[in-house]
Amino acid sequence: MKLQGLKVLDLSAFLPGPHMTMMMADHGADVIMVEPANGVGEPTREIGEKTADGVSVWFRNIARGKRSLKLNLKDDAGRELFHRLADQADVVVEAFRPGVVKRLGVDYETLSARNERLIYCSISAFGQDASIAKKPAHDLTVQGLAGLVDLNRGLEDGKPTLPNVPFADASASLMALSAIMMALYRRETTGRGDYIDLAMFDAAMAWTPNVLGPVFAQNRPPEPKEMRSFGGSAMYNLYETADGEYLILGGSEVKFAANLLEALGRRDLLPIAKLPPGPDQEPLRSFFRETFIAKDLASWKKFLSEVDCCWSWVRSLDEAINDPYTNERRMVFTDSEGHRHLGPPIRFREEPPTPVPSVPGYGEHSIEIAREAGLSEPEIDALIARGVI
Image (tube, rainbow, N blue to C red; front, side, top):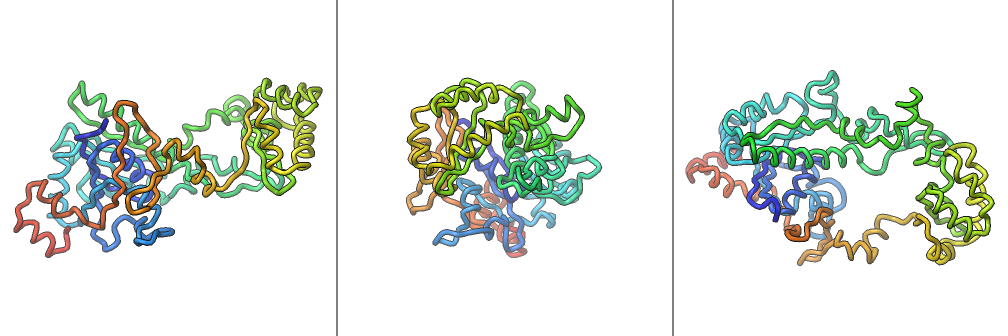
């Protein structure tokens, strides 16, 4: 596997860091979850629905294939153990509020002085040195300040709504993985690691090119209901069907509009599809609303199966997970104990991922990891007795 032999120490929690390091574990990296010695560890162990074995679904899908080290970093001996592990590591990931790792003595400057090949990735809401760097935040608050929640406005009431996908978390995870891979590649020629300051705010904002037109070109905020991506385009929209389901048109190219309108016997409306998104396309949107609500979703699926245009329909996550196509892509797999997992989205032909479905018990690997760091049995016993590991 691509990352075989790579050692990663993960101090992060919840979603961005743990999801990213799980993807690394799926491709062979030895990922050690460094969990606080607070009796709980990774918070997602106790969050959300759990399967019959008592494991939360969230935890199972960010922790598989990892090892767990319960460690008190506020204890000098615990800190020294972490230093020894970092001496052997390739990557350290942390997601504390800025300043915390410095106080704990596990910051980049301290660790890189001992291991110049170390790649250290700090994931935070707003970066390490911005004026609001220490502001408490999770995905929703970051999306709000990045201008993304404002884009989630209802087409009828114009009010913002909660985003359903943790986009700031997700984009930060992917950006962090990309940055770490770049740093590993560069290390091959320089022999030196690097420090990565990854802000969720930056990662989320970086994905807005398709909606920046009004801001950069006209110095005004976007009006979502008038924009191509949010309801302004008749061919990029949701339409209710007779049975209360929703059909999706998802491609505003003129060729798709021509194919669909030809099939519906209304090619005369094609000039409207060529107009810019916004009020001028209302006649076509109105036609689609009146047309699609006249029949149920099953009828439209049959009809549109013969039309070359971008379309789909709104279905639940449960339906998507259980779809045969999802199985074809191996995006869901079942382990030997019958538990389902999300599959690895990154695949290589020559070295495919091999996810290890087991999840670590809290502190399950503390003793073996301490041994790997070179601690003697009496030293390990002393750490256990003091609750350091």
